[in-house]
Length: 312
Figure (cartoon, rainbow, N blue to C red):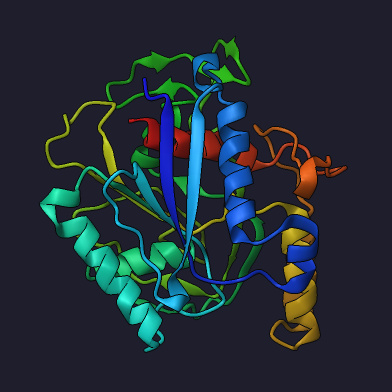
């Protein structure tokens, strides 16, 4: 097993000031999310793993030399991936080269929200405004077999051959669980754009009524068709790094600016407050516990499943 995991974080935005003041910038938010996921991982042998996250401000033209990194991860952004901005064009070119150059294939690529949409564009799909409107808050995600297999690596449930895999929940073995039920109401989403079709050579993770492509995986070509197949690309439309307090502050700002109308704002606040399952407690900026925010997905099953990809 690895002793150190190194992640290059491509930073595509700065949170609103109200979020920065309470929770820090995206480098702090993502680092905290990943470290919480490592420290609460069901397999206790993983919890002592050293995690290194280096940030690169893509909008300033800063990109990593990927040699030596286990993964490149992309943050979300208030920008749209299809905007013809020079920094976005450079980012798409960088990602396209990263995922197609055989000499760089050892580096896994993970995209969150805007990052997923950049991956879609780099692999030949289309990103556009969603005619169904915003997804803000916690949504049920209807998992595909691929999505269930991915979560079964840390949760348990049935694998592709129908065999039961033991569930690990916060270090304890539980007799049985359906991975699809555990993830129910577990996706914190915050987006207006969407990927219109599944990119070539990828497998769909899950869907919502408003957004058919909630995530996708690309396996390494040499992977075995049976589980576990090693993952090269992981793309998630939802935000495992976000907690309700962050989402509420973003809603406050966008509502005050008129970006969100009253019905959208009201629904978003109701969804942010929905109960979530399968998670751990949350620690805010400076190590202070954030009261009332237990059971959050970023520090639970999806966070663990992201860590599992980094460990492969």
